Amino acid sequence: MQHNWKPIISQLKSAGKILLTTHVNPDGDGIGSEIAMYHFLLKMNIISEIINSSAFPEEYAFLDPEKVIQQYIPERDFERLKEFDLIFIFDVGGITRTGILGDDLARLEIPSICIDHHPENHIVCDYKVVDDKAPSTTCLVYELIKEIGTEYIDKQIAEAVYVGLMTDTGSFRFENANKYAFRVASELLEYDIKPNDIFKHVYESYSRQRMALLGTVLQTVHYENDEKLAWFTISRDDLKRAGVQLDEIGGYTDFIRSIKGVEVSVMFLEIDLNKIRVSFRSKGKVVVNQIARKFGGGGHFYAAGLTVENTLEKVTLMVLPEARKAIEQIKQ
Ligand SMILES: [Mn+2]
Image 1: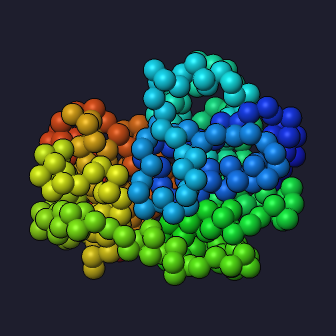
Image 2 (image 1 turned 90 degrees about the horizontal axis):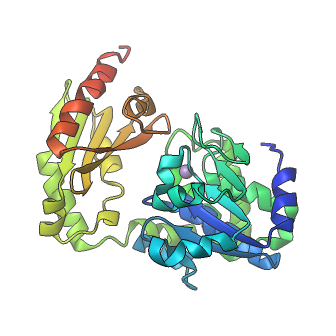
């Protein structure tokens, strides 16, 4: 894959201080991109900071032993944002996904660069490299670093790139686990990373409470359309009762999709009072970002989402008819 990195390279080389950020509820790809870029810039003697709108999910702590990732607190950090003269936004297809930090940055007119792999990326930036054929954003970051010099890549950078690749390809089993994905993975192995250890950190470190709540969810899944559609809700009360943090819920929708016969799984998660995050996962017959887009969301063809302000019940009543319609259109 060839992209024009030249404008980015000249901008980062002349920058004084760079801000690195990703989407709300960051995943392995967003965090991996930030960490890879941060350590690469450090080696180039370019100062950068990673600041995100959301808290840092525990399962990625191993990627950041120095604890360089910060969470944005407007009252404390807003003035400080003016110190940055370049912003990198990773893995973000639309500005609403950058959360409160994105809103504040929009007021400051700092030059920005977006590196992303979402189809129909519509974020407004000064420069963008967007490629929906890239299995992860970290693959694009890796390509950028390679363009400047492979000598900058070390184990920590390779691990961060690998985490984005592993999580966004569902551990190399989704449709985007293409030749390119495996080629990058095999190149990363040259840096002595341990896929088995990385897998254990990310996917085998769940709390008992999280797994117990998943058990409850499994018993309350609603099946419709000949069991091709599976949906479930999680309220703030459910989380509180189960003793589970919001950022531990990642992966539930993938898990429900794995049930035989299910084509689309949908989670309705109450992330705040009357604020609902809807996540879609599809096995490949239904393009779910089209459903998400009807409500102002977006994402990948088979993994997409949206956030709406309303009650859990109202949001299910609003979104499910569109999901049912999409499933009815599956060609036999
Ligand atoms: Mn991604």
